[in-house]
Structure formats: structure tokens, C-alpha cells
Image (cartoon, rainbow, N blue to C red; front, side, top):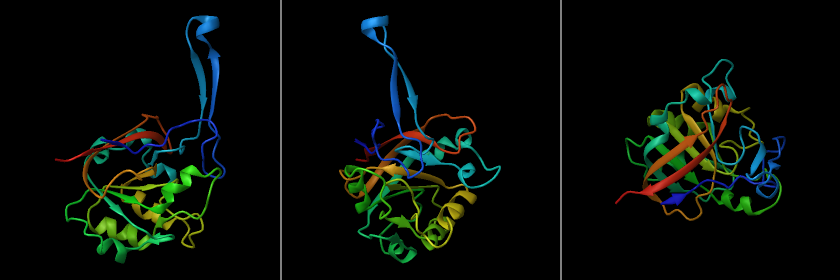
Length: 208
């Protein structure tokens, strides 16, 4: 079993204009007999899901995402691209027909070890997103904080392509310890009513 979630902690890397993580004690065991803390974080902190509401006015929010899209058999594939994963690259990656959940492992996971937000991460190209739709994929995941390059000239077309078709986007993974292969994905985002995103715990179980 592989925990592919990024730990939430103060000082962790967040998107450039995202809310920094804060964990502040309200009660302590020494003074109050029990520990309680105040947690501050953005809806797209660390490992998280993007629902349609993230980019589409009136789109489905985090609490409306179908659980069945986030639980089930999954394929992990590694890519060494430093910019974008294209449809051509996906076509040559031996992704079985019938795959419904696809996780893209890239060199960008190493950025979790570097302080600050970095823009030189790997994303999925718009034609790669279209390829996922033609294959009937219901969830696409990637390491680091976005499935789309921040400097993409296509104005968030990858996000819009996937989200307008109801595909769940899972971002902020760390799959450095995960070999390519078939797994069972368990991804449970917070049941955040009306959320434009939701932090999640994501785990892969090897299929024997």
C-alpha cells in the first residue's frame, strides 16, 4: 500500500497566491486537559481534488463529486517530460483500454523537497486532456499542484476540457515510491459543501 498524499503542515509549498497553512493551538493538554487547534488552509492545499466549480460557474462542487470516480482500479504511468504530457505520449504509454483512473507520475514530485512555489512543473496538454476523454477516463491525477502548466498559453484549457466533461482532477500527489502498474485507488476528499476544491487523502493498494 502506498500513501501518495502530501502531508499538510505549516511552511509547506502552496500555490503562489494560496492561503499559507496555519496550525495554531487553542487548547493544550498541559493547560486545559485536551489539545485543540485552529487549522487554516486553502481548498487547493497539498493533495486535493478539483471539481467543476473550480473553473465553471454553477458547476458541481466538491460535495457533489461522485465517490465511484475516486474509488476503484487505477493505472500509474511514469513520464519524464519536463513541460507537458501530450496525447501522442499518452498513446504510446501502454494504457489499457477501459482504464477509468489514470495517475501521471512525473519528475515534478521532486519539487516537494524544495522550498517555495515553482512554476517549472510538468502538466497535461489540452490534447492530452482530449485523449483522456476519448478513452472514457473519469479521474486524472498528477504530482505537484496543478494538472496544467501555470504558463500555458491556452488559458486553462486542460482544466476546462476535463472539468466540463465531469472528469475529476486529482492534484498534489507524491508518487516517487510507486512503481508503474495497476492499483486500487482510494481517494477521499473532505466533504466540503460548496467547495471549489477539497483536500484529500489518496492511497494506492497493489493489485495481486
